[in-house]
Length: 529
Image (cartoon, rainbow, N blue to C red; front, side):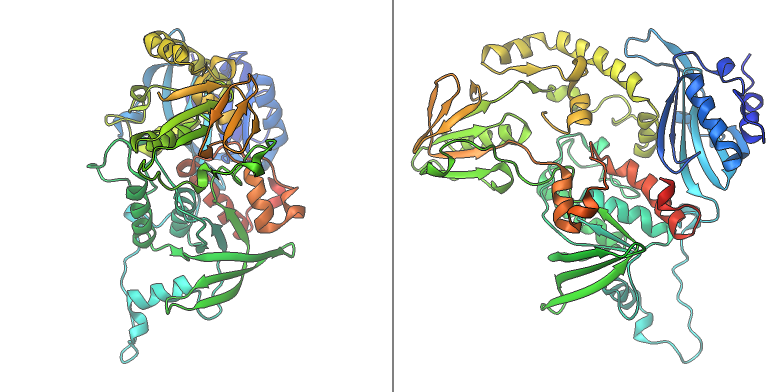
């Protein structure tokens, strides 16, 4: 019989051996840890890897308290669940609360997998909910001034007046940048942003895309419009009291080893252009998972007499007066959206598909499982989602993709007959895993093949097909996010960074904020990562 608290107790004691890991876990089992037991992200497979880590840990982290979650939340009660899509593997899922020395965390314990994650630093609780600030302003008799008003204090904070300096500089005020700021502010850290562009379109359902602390309204559509989201993000920054600098350009960023000196040019509230030099301990790049727009090098590109642009430069199609021959190269989401825009305006449009595309039907992403109208709160859904080790998630997604292809057989066969090649993703694990591994690749005439050459008024494909064209739009993706990093902080520092595969900002901003707070308070060092 598995004695929950008894079997976990050896982890908190001075002697860490195999601690009966072989008795607790199957030979194929997983422990996924996000900052609860170390200051980095880990997934250990099997009792041997787990024991090896615990032996290295030694006295570094011990339990102060461990107990089954007793919050009363019905979504967190112990329950019989499936570890795979077809319910062939059944197990008990339950939540546990962990308090270590010196942190607090939460874990999802199963006989097959365990996930531990940092919730907050002890002594640095977020000022939210029952711990919210009072909001009162107290002045000595005869000392009250206009500077005591909330509006004046916010202006001073936003402009970093006097000797005030930002602890964290967040570059990019989109969904990720604002999420990072919202996570940092309740634990006592300041931040500011510079704007590059707002081009957010939600291709996932509304339940999946909520912002921290302030979810989208219950009256919103399942798939929110770009401008609708942009207005919400602008209001979000104001309501969350985030120090957002819009219409700003980062001119220079230099690191002296302990802090960054950054020069920013931005439009002041008076309407003029102001150049400020700030010092900050941390820079968060939140400019999007994509880097710079990528157009393939094609012979004859400069000879084309019509209009050429990348999908990132496209705004909208003009009415067909007269009708034009439009060629869109690339069949991802942007390629289809742009082709549909031209088609709706009355133009003749051809999509050029260079390689198979991984797709899902709209119904498949409409709201299912954890992220749905009847699902748990978004942050609880995040906790469950990120607790699943990638090998197990891969197995589930292969099974789900198989079922999806069978249930929508006529749909996919129709696409193939129309000349559209469908990709099942890496190992047949579908669109989600294609994005996780490659960050992309996600009916109007469709032509197969690569573009071999561009002539004065046409494209020539590698199979000899000639496509007349008045305009060409390349929906061919972007370079690595590090290409943008190079522009911001230079090549030397960028070489030290790892490639970014994906960013789910609501969850990872929650993890990043206490990491930065721990560095600021001397609990950890960058070298510990």
